[in-house]
Image 1 (cartoon, helix red, strand yellow):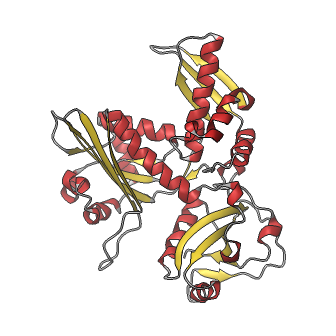
Image 2 (cartoon, one colour):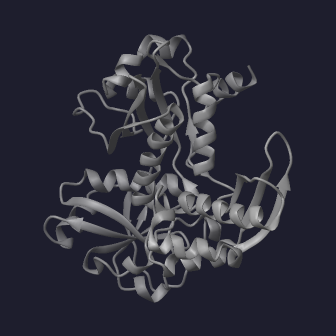
Image 3 (cartoon, helix red, strand yellow):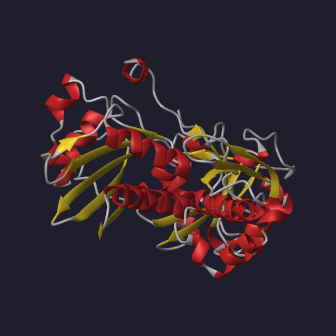
Amino acid sequence: MRTAALLLSLLCMPLQAALVSDLYTASVAVDGRNNAARASGVKDGLEQVLVRITGNNGVGQTAAGKSIIARADNYLLTYSFQSGEQTNLQVRFDPVKLQQQVRESGLPIWGSQRPVTLHWLAVADELMPLQLVNELADDGEQLNAIAQRRGLPQLLPILDLEDNLAVSANDVLGNFPEPVLRASARYGGDFVLLSSVQQFDGQWHYQMYLYDGQPQQDGAPLPMALAQHRGVVDSRSAALEQVLAATASYYAGRYGAVASDATAGADNQVVFELDGGIDQLVELERYLVSLAPVQQTAVVAVNGNRITLALQLIGGLNEFQQLLSLESRVELLQLSDPLQPPSLLPPEASPVPEQAPSAAANLPHYRWLNQ
């Protein structure tokens, strides 16, 4: 009941992108307290951390991932054993050393400022008909545990009378986003995830569709999924894992950065000064991709509260800048001092590597007002 009361209280305030703590810690089950169990547990814990900060579920199977995991003790800060029904090893890794190695290995890094996902999940098995899931259900608890392990801020609907009148399990299963997005407006999540998990002949079929959480305006076109994925696995828990793995992969691809890509698309780079965290970046990206010339945006670097974006454009940068001049929320800045402004995010919260001030000094600079 305390969980339900908390969820009800959240409806009274808009959600913001979340700062995820403990990205570089992990807890793994081990067979004992001997050196062999510790060494194996440290490697398993590092793989869990790498999945969390890269968004890649298979990073441990890549050559770069294997190389980092093989030297897990180089990045280990602390470890301790926790006793219970199962012995667990708690490990904590050095963020600075690990980030440096991940960047040098050409892997992306997804920072601790992460969007909040409102997750509508419909589940059915051979004994239970299709139904929606909230945090009080067993599937909801398991889903939240997976999300926490992956560093995914997530909210499940409370499924009160208002939700149940607005959304059915078949809306989620059939990927009918309009009623779901309308019902989602009260929660204020950055993104809305529709997923379903069903059992057929002993196999578990899953699918997911991710949508922008922006409230839909009357007469707006039918919303399109930003990401979608489906598959068949052997267990219920594996299906839930795959749904959130696909979600994390999309976010990491959108908000993460690869250091070796820092000079890509330099001719179409611009700098925006923000007055907030990743929630402001989400709003800015929503505006930019609504412009006809903009095909894609990517965060290249962060320098304090200035975000450098690489733009894939149809036409030239001049046409894009002309459109910006018509937007009241965008202000052109004339910068005489390219030095780094005060940071609004702690170093560990930056979603991408920091950029040297001189690298962005000659790029067009704007301020995103988001009025």
